[in-house]
Image (cartoon, rainbow, N blue to C red):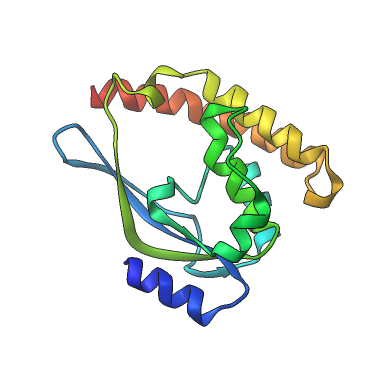
Length: 173
C-alpha cells in the first residue's frame, strides 16, 4: 500500500496527504476494529477535510504510520506541536492540508495496537479537552474557515467519542 500511496502523490500534484484505512488490533494481534475516513475513496479538498475532521471530533485520517505526506507541503507546516499531546498528529495534518488536498484510500495502510495499559487509554477525558483546545485554536484564525456550528459539533462528538474510547479500552483489556 505504500507503493500505491507514492503513486497517488506522483499522479496528483495537488495532493498533500494520502491516508488509508487502519486495523485496530489487540495485544494478541486480533483485529478488533477497522477504521477509515468516512465516505468515498478519492480526492477531498484540503479545507473540506479540515472541516470534516473538526466536526467529527476525532482524527479521521489516522495515525502517522498510515499516512503519507508530500515533503514540499510538510516543510512549510513546521514541526509537530507538543502543546496538546492527544491531537499532535491532527494539528499537524490540518496545517499540511492548508497547502493541498487529501486523497483517501480504503485499503488498509496500517495497524494500530491497543491495550488497556497504554498511553492512549490512560489519558481518557483529556482526549476531548485536547481536541476542543485544538479546534478553538484553529477556529480563532479565519483562514481555516471554521464556524461556531463546527465547534458545537466538535464538542458533542469529541465528548461522545472519548466516552466510547474508554469503553473500548476496557473491553480490549
